Image (cartoon, one colour):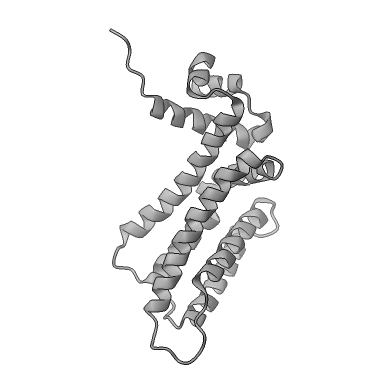
Amino acid sequence: MPKHVDYENRRRRIAEAVCLLADEHGPQGVSMRDVAARAEVSLGAVQRCFRTKEEMLLFAVDHVGERITERVRTRLAASPAQSAATALGHAADEIALLREEHRAEARIWLAFIAQAAVSEPLADPLRTSYAALQDLLVRLIAEAADSGPADNGAAPPDPRREARALLALADGLTTHVLIGHSTAEEAGEVLHAHLAGLWERLGTTRP
């Protein structure tokens, strides 16, 4: 009887191996043979899942982006009664990847970004991941604005512009921590100060 192979699980296992090797050598230093060894599968098994190295890297980028997005959504779902402002703070904390346990993931993400600067196919899934995170932030910012007090005559902040600024800040802080320009604690203070200013502009109470 033919052995059943869970190809989706194998693809995720291979993606994890790609991420580990990309963290060590950068995406350009990843080979299908090395991935097979790290994932403890045959080279043929890798080639049956991915026809080329580029296809394998694209899947790995998607895998990391989905993992970050899913972690944000899981944290938000864990406290459904929290205010929109609190939910926004939690989402920003997760996206910034400042905690020690996410440091390797942050290195991998930025390694893929660096490679994507000269690889349009690799840039495409990264744009998709950023779009998903931005849309989530837009929704949370809009909800926080709606939960604030009645209009005081001031023009309300644009949720999409604020989401873009917050996403860019989170990315920049991640980079500063990785290269040692800031500590995680200092970066966290900058992020929370920005959020405090955003809550003030939204007219909502700081959580």
